[in-house]
Image (cartoon, rainbow, N blue to C red; front, side):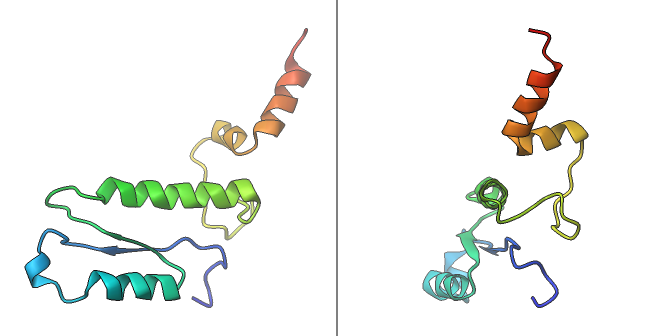
Length: 107
């Protein structure tokens, strides 16, 4: 990970949680590995849908928390974050959006 950003968000997903009898890595081993390497960890099952959406939600939440805390700057080249629409950039900084709205307001 020498070439990746220090603020990269990585999630370790143990898949096929529904096949517990065929397990090769215990929950404890995977959890310990994730903790030692500062990774998020979830076990998922595509068959049952368990934790599939949750994996994306937790990852997105962690990225947003890093942006809000200033730990991650999405405007910086190489941050790994891209906006789909310029209007979405206003969501990043509510203060900037409020200031801009106040300037545009005729009241």
